[in-house]
Image 1 (cartoon, helix red, strand yellow):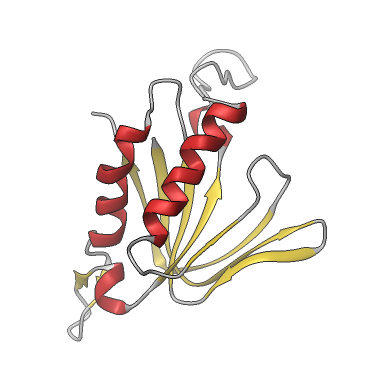
Image 2: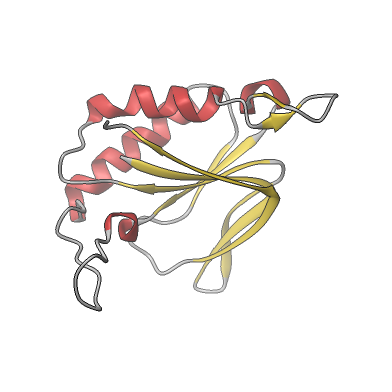
Length: 147
């Protein structure tokens, strides 16, 4: 799995003109799932996301985690994170897992994050979404479950 983490002051996702997910301070997480990914990848990625020290402490240093600051997560499924743009002019999505299999892993990931006690909001898997991100810093990182 590949996750793009953006530290935010707020973020929301809109589907068909309605806000379906909204957070204040925390992380906007764009999540891509590849054909190689399984449910076994979830614990590593979840742990990394909630414990990564990317929030500032009292001295302005990135020393605090999402858990430390009581932050929230807006999780958005992002099929295109596995787009390969090395050849030609159109991305190749052969490595991305789609459909029902990806949705199952995504749903398990959501459950796992919610099990931590963190407020977790989501978009709608497979829907066309308009995502608003107020990036804080800006701080944007990529985390992957595979080496």
